[in-house]
Amino acid sequence: MVRLTDLLLASLLALASSVLADNIKLQQVDRKISLNSQFVRITETVKVKNVGDQVVSEVILCESLGGDAVLSSYKVVETSPKNVLAVSRATVAGAPAEAACHSVNLANPLPAGETVGLTVTAVLAKAQIPYPAELGQHETQLMLYNGNVYVLSPYSVSSQTTEVILPTSTVKSYTDEKPVSKSDNKIKYGKYDLIKPFTEKRLSVHFENNKPFKHILTYVKEIEVSHWGNIYVEEKYEIKNAGAKHTGSFSRLKYAHMNLKANSFRDLKAVLPRSAHSLYYVDLIGNISTSNVRKAPTSTIMDLELRYPLLGGWKVDFTIGYSVPLKGFLTSAKSGQRRLTMDLSSPLEDVYIEDMVVRVVLPEGATNIKANLPYDMEKSFDIKYTYLDTTGRPVLVLHKQNVAAPEHAAKFSVDYDFNTVHILREPLLLVSVFFGLFVAVIAYNRMEFTITRDDKWEAARSKEVLATYMEQIQALLEDEATILSGLARATIQLREASEVDAVQREKTTVEKRLKDLEEKVKPLLAAVESRSVRVGSQVRDVLEKTRLLQSRYFKQLSDRIDLLKKGIALGEISRKLAPAQDALTAAKRELEGTITTVFGAY
Image (cartoon, rainbow, N blue to C red; front, side, top):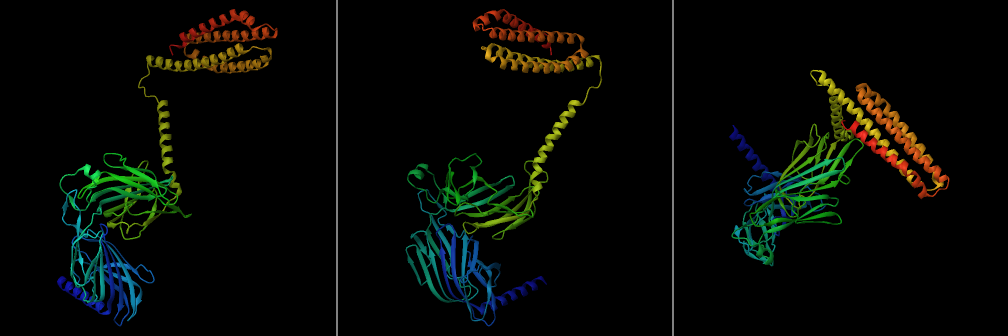
């Protein structure tokens, strides 16, 4: 039963293809095949005519893929007006195995007898084969391109031409299908008339191409959005020189001074956004300093130099990263919806990416995530946990293979909903953690973990509390000593009777401050006496001595003021006050010794 269904389906496809072939004819096809880089870029100008009696709304177009070639980009535009047409892969009965066919939906149905002009642009990767497959450092790279002399088409072609454009004029061999002509770096085939559907004739060109074949095996780009002001971008590369493999020895001397570089490359150029900052360029070893950054009017140019020249078959891994501000990349609406707009592909120029993954890490709390893409990509979602995350950050994962630059260089956007309240989640989490920590410490200090309370424990606890009071009293005594030192300086600096009023005001301030300190000491003294009468008596003795010392300071100031008012000279004043000053110094030393004796144990 399955076999019968397959046969019926194949018959229907053959019948549909036959009907299409009878209704459509390609009046003129002019094809250009550019082999100037590692890609094969094909441009076809096609004139399609409806030769049937019914309206046609779609056209089948095919490209020849020889060997390991892959179709990286395919685009069809109507010649007039310039409408980009929808294209989808199609299976056509009778097509050769290497044919990649597409169904093209016309912008407007094509009436019977009418024509429409189409421009087809195709980019093929891996279509140039190194031949020979290996070369030495001093040898020139030769490539072999295999295609079809005629345009592969399910329709008959009235007239066609093909022009092959090469990077140099050096050509070892090429298919000689008359009429054919070669001029400098161009080979022209045709014109050919009345070509039947799917006519095949191998087109082979063996030519010189020393352009670097930069194949990125894996490319992972991570875009992390922070609503605190920055967007962080990191790009990881595994890049290979896919040209002819290097054989034999390698000489850095010849490479640097004799320009024997063959098909190797060492320099890469990344075109980043104009506002990019905080750039870095690293690999597994660490930072790579052989790079240069310069600002252009609309971009930031990052010139990268690899650690070593990349010869044929060699590969290297590295990572570049940068940050951009939110402004210009993230927009928001009053409804809370945000739109992120960024570059989708790699910023490196003229590279082929075999496998590309773009990860968009959105803030925690983002919902209703939608991607607006310039071309089809596989989409999936993931979760990433970073600092202070609770539920994790949603990650939009985009995946595509066979990406060509610059054909796939385009911007994309991601729409998502985000409530501004979520931006406070991490600060509130930090505050809560520290608040909980402080509460735990306070609770710990107030809790008692002692199992039994004997006399020794009580004594130790009493001594600990007593030490706390003694430390507080000692701190107040130190404050008092500082105040009295200031009064002593004011006394010595008093040299004229006109300064007496100012010093008297300062004296009043000192008396008030000393009074405040005395009030603070009273409850502490009472607490000490309640714990130890002996220690309390010692503290009272210290306080009494401090009062006597205070009176000496004030007496010294008063005597100096009286002598100045009498008009006595400064030298005579110093001589008369010297005995009192000596007594004051001795009393001060005695007090300091007593404080050390009483408070030193605590």
